[in-house]
Amino acid sequence: MDCIFCKIIKGEIPSTKVYEDKKMIIINDIAPQAAKHYLAIPKVHFANIVEMDKKQAKIVGKMLKTIGELADSLGLQDGFRIVSNKGENGCQSVGHLHIHILGGEKLSEKMG
Ligand code: AMP
Image (cartoon, rainbow, N blue to C red):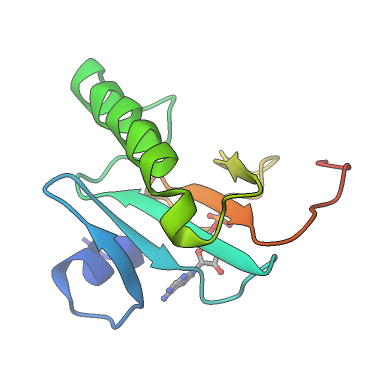
């Protein structure tokens, strides 16, 4: 499958991995939009939360828990924002679900 995040997970494309477990990786976003900008990516390929099945939803729940546990060590102790873009209006550019984690500074109050 021609998916950039699947290739990153397989190690075929380099990335700056800051965390990995059996079900997910967290990498630095290549084009950061905040002082800290990570991407949490499940190892299983599915496009977005509309496509996800119950098993995948469990993985995403676990991912959120892990992000919370790692927040301090990722330099996000003063707070952060998580975002998952979906489809054209959401400006999703990579069709493999991912959660943006933004922080490391005061973010804009405007989200749209
Ligand atoms: P989205 O537009 O929500 O689909 O987010 C895709 C994100 O992936 C963007 O923020 C890109 O900067 C990021 N991205 C694309 N290619 C890479 C890569 N090779 N390594 C790290 N981040 C990437």
